[in-house]
Image 1 (cartoon, helix red, strand yellow):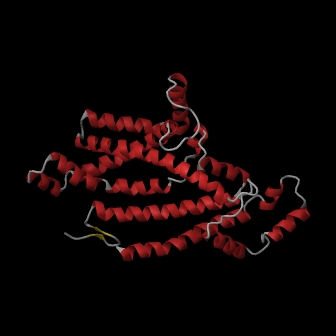
Image 2: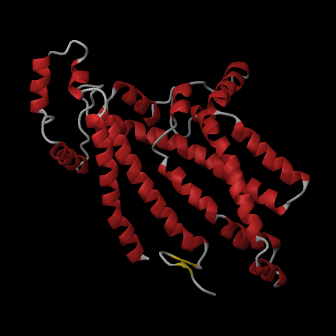
Image 3: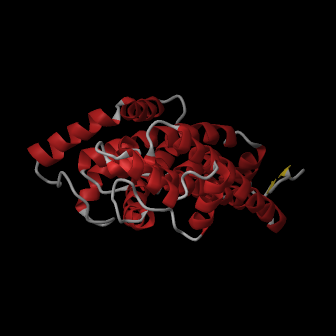
Length: 315
């Protein structure tokens, strides 16, 4: 296992270098001069050239990239173009936990509802309960965020007046309920279908019939044998969800006025705030790699037949 972990970790710097260089090059050769953005519409050409030279922006791109990555490895992502005098690290460090908490709450809703419904549906395959459960989850998945968010605001904030409509107060504040539901409910359908399909494949395996023939209680068969093995596809999807914990949701954060990474990144894109965009890409890529490594490590826990780097163990 440790050899596999080390091998995966050794690939991480190369992946980060490729992604970061492509993003850096797009920022350098894309539309919009960073210095002119700093100076505004009344920029003076001589002043622009002087600032560009002072900041080393007239150096070859590889030198600029090496200098940027050296600073980034120390946690310095540069200064924001949009918020002058403030570092990107200072701006992001307050917003990443907000988006992470929101997405974690949404993930809990998706898993907490999707796994039981999927298991329930699979164990009652072909019955009206099965059809109704799948149809209900697909109905909620088909509703776009820009429709469910206003509807929930109208119902729970305006008509019933039981939930606050905007703002942020942390993970245990009531203001997280509506945005977490808007984000989490569409994921219930995905988790339900994955759990149902995987459960249907597992329940027909020989070891399930053997467990029942030995007289194991039905609850033990469902939890220790069926559910445990059926969760492998769900864990694979969980890796992508874990990687997005700090990314936030652009539309939801805008609707509910949540000061997370999503809304901040949208503003940075419109303002061409390249240091912020670079930092978000680097952090997101790092989280994606680490999340998938964690998922790979969970596979042998769920199914001991899986050997890291070597597929299934024979027999």
